[in-house]
Amino acid sequence: MAKIVILGAGVSGHTAALHLKRQLKQNHEVIVVSPNADWNWIPSNIWVGVGKMKTSQVLFPLAPIYRRKRIEFHQARAVAIWPEGDEGDPMGAVDIVYTDPKREGATERLRYDFLINATGPKLNFEATPGLGPDHNSWSVCTADHAAKTSEAFAKIVEELRRGEKKTLVVGMGHGACTCEGAAFEYAFNVEHELREAGVRDNAEIVYLSNEYELGDFGVDGMRFSQSGYLTTSKIWTESLFRERNVRAILQAHVERVDPGVVHYEQLDGTKGSLEYDFAMLLPPFRGVDLQAFDRTGTDITSDLFAPNGFLKVDADYTAKPYEQWRAQDWPNTYQSPAYDNLFGIGIAFAPPHPVSRPRTSVNGTPISPAPPRTGMPSGVMGRVVAENITHRLTTGATQGPKTASMATMGAACIASAGANLRTGSAAAMTMFPIVPDYQKYPLTGRDDKATTGEIGRSGHWTKLLLHYLFIYKARGLPGWHLIPE
Image (cartoon, rainbow, N blue to C red; front, side, top):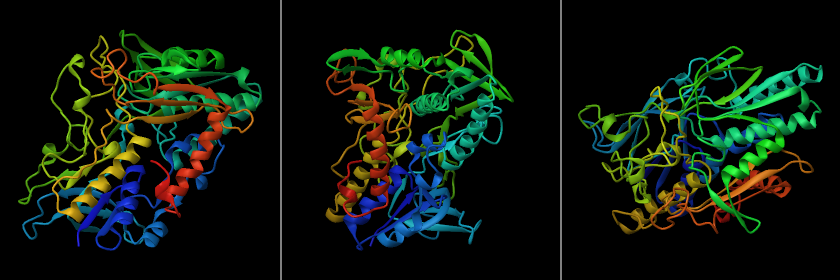
């Protein structure tokens, strides 16, 4: 009987756990380690952050699901990997520290035959002085963050109702951030709620981003079909900003966040400051704090992990200029090149390079989006790795047959622009592939027919439906596996 340990219970890790148990049943052990007691449907944190949903609508406890599925659950954080075992046992192991209130601080070494690193990111607020809910800005990265942000936003709305003028800043808190789409969503949900409250004229909304131009979204922008015509995500997004009167400051790296003032640098070297009454700024990501050791206890962390803390997998990490990047650089199986029973999926794997063109300011500051790999791609990775491990256990093969390269994978995204069944809207986008392939699609890197964008009320209805659909799926309820990732 094999032991499969999964670190993390987000979209990737939880998806992998459910599929593994469904496929392997009781023939093998599936063990999940997560520091969080609850599963969070993170896309809907946007709605929590403007008061349209409660945290109870985006969270549910993991332990009952795993008991029902006969998946072993440890509420703990992983701190070290021993891929060769230790001097007492050659079986791979991972050290964990319990966060469960009943065992908080206790440690254990779990053995494994297969290990999936799906830890997600460390929210690196420390990269920017003054950034984050413990300092001078708000966040929607977790349900708890979003709830506190909602309270702060509600206070701003009340002050606007009294006739006060306010500046609200939404965007990225560092030049190397990812998840520009989430900042875009939050900005337009804020704008929508202010209109609904009748106070929009008293508020200035500023979108502050590291994107080179609007519509980049960390994927180097898109050219897509819309109502039978070809357009670009730049033109499409700029029109929405003009329509909703949201001011954009682009090509920006936030240097620090003081109380009431954001200080930033732009690509041309310009230094600016922006006074604010409310700021929701997302942090950059890095890998969680995981060390790795060989059997003798020698530190091999730098062999397994990239400098940003993400796990190296079957990608081409050769340093090369943007013009030499290829779709083939991206991983297919998410296996560690050093240990074929170790995988990194979701945000936990190290990308070979960004998707957007890298840029550096005249002062030497990198200012360009890191590559997104959340949502649909994360779920697909989780399922494919689960299928490949199942294949290896049931056939004895050393490799699984399935692949999930972001350079051959499409994605659908619905970005909320206001939550209301009657007046709400959302931008529905598809792209294929996620990572541009300029050899196959020389003009834009993507298939124009499969890369689309529309905005409207039906998009909101669809996003709301998906909220309930994916929570149903994540609960492992009857037929859950029939719902696509």
